[in-house]
Length: 122
Image 1 (cartoon, rainbow, N blue to C red):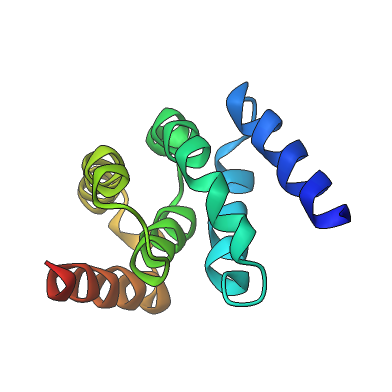
Image 2: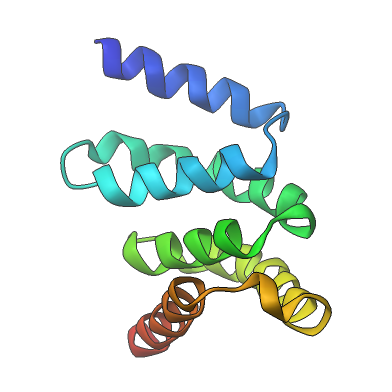
C-alpha cells in the first residue's frame, strides 16, 4: 500500500512538471534500477516522458546519459521512446559541440551502450 502511495505521489508531481533536470534524471535511474523489484514504477513512464522532454534542454552530461541508459534498460513503449529520444539526442549533440570536456568516460560509455541496445531492439 505504501508503494502505491509513493507511485501516486510521484505521478502527481510529474504531472505538474515542477521537477528540476537532476531530479528527473534521478527518477529515471531509480526506475531502471528497481524495475525488477518494483514493476509498478514503470506506470510512471507516460508521465515521466513529457516531464523529461520539458527539462532535457537543461540537462548536464551525467543526467542525459543516465536517462538514455534508463531508456535502454527499461522496457519502454516505442511510442514513448519516439517522443523522448529526439530531445535527448539534441541535448547530447548540443553538449558535445558546446562543452565536450564536461563528458567523462562513463557518460560516453553509457550513451554508446544505450544507443547500441536501443538499435538492437529495432
